[in-house]
Length: 145
Image (cartoon, rainbow, N blue to C red; front, side):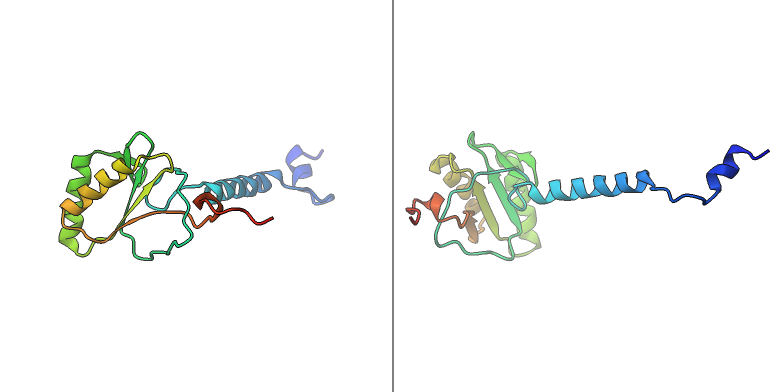
């Protein structure tokens, strides 16, 4: 009499293994989710950036500070207080040249962006930029008809 395991190991019919397909599908799902997350590199939070026709890509940004509508600051997705930001800027400046980009949401008042810029410049860092998207429509351009 044949045991159950003998019949299982017998190669009389082709079988489709489902478990490896599930693993592959989960990997693809995670991959596409990570690709489609709309975050500013370095800030770790999703922001709706203002548009500009004259944006320039900066290659050597070392610190990106995200600023939300309520004025909350984020570095690498973690909330940061003004004191923590100042301490981080001091530590990074001691290591060498520091380039900072401030990524503020469209709805952030200009004064809050300037307050963050003042914190950065108070540490003697002059290389400061403001992040913007290159979408011409959001910059107030009229769409072509």
